[in-house]
Image 1 (spheres, rainbow, N blue to C red):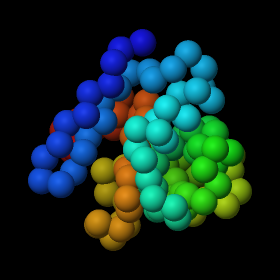
Image 2: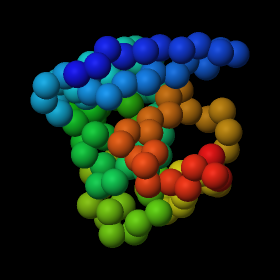
Image 3: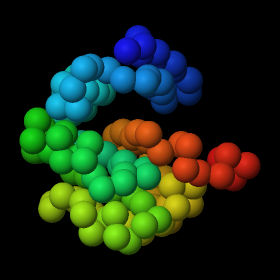
Length: 117
């Protein structure tokens, strides 16, 4: 496990990390602790895969509103109930800017074309 780094610029905090805890559940709990989101916050998970991180976070913080973005319709179909699903590239989601309290990109950057980022 590496220590997390929190970098701030122009009112935006970027949390760069590899792994925050030994288990997936503990990892999700630590992530939510660091984010310290207000009740009812809107969160978007870009490149969400099958939504497992969201599923774990929902169990801990059911008050959060989740939007899950993925280019793969099959993976989106596996995502947990209660989240808004968006079939799109994480680079161009079509979602309005500044509409989320947090943006999560967990384990997905390796799947995007870095020339487009």
